[in-house]
Image (cartoon, rainbow, N blue to C red; front, side):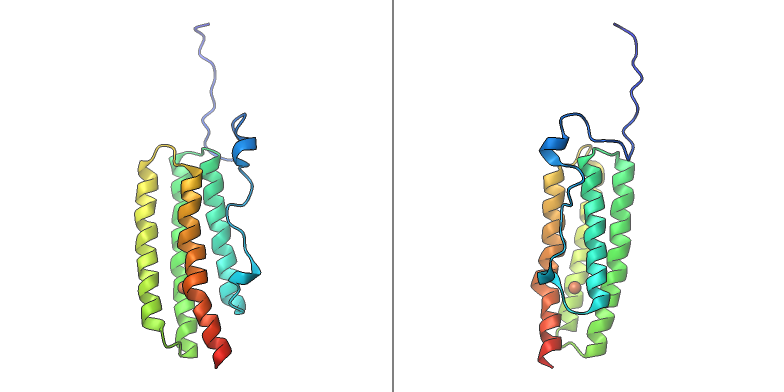
Length: 159
Ligand SMILES: [Fe+2]
C-alpha cells in the first residue's frame, strides 16, 4: 500500500463507473421524440429532434460523470442551437401570420434566460444530479413544444 495508483481523469467518452450502468443506463436517451410532438412542419420538427438530441447528449455526459468542462461545452451547444431554432420558429410564425407571435416570442426569451441561468447553476455544481437535469430539460423543452408550439400547428390546420 502507499503506492499512488494511476487514476485516469474521467474527462469524457469513458465507460460508466462500475455499478452505475444498471442504475442509470447512461446511454438510454433521457428524452424521446414522439409523433405527438410533431407540428407537421418538417423544418421545425427536425430542429426539435435535434434539440432533443442535444439534451440527451447533455444528460448522458452528466450520467457518466464527465467533467464540468465537457458538461459546459454541451450546455453551450444546446444554448446556441436553441437561439437559432427560436429565430427559425419565429420566422415561420411571421411568415404564416401567427396571431400569438409576440406572446410566443416572449416565452422564447424567457426560455433562453432560463437555460442561461441553468447553465450557470450547473457550472457551479460539482456533480449535478442526472435525474434533476433530465427533469429540467423535459419541462423546459418538451413542456414548451406541447404547451406552446403545438398551438402553431393548430393555427396552421385552422387556416
Ligand atoms: Fe416555440
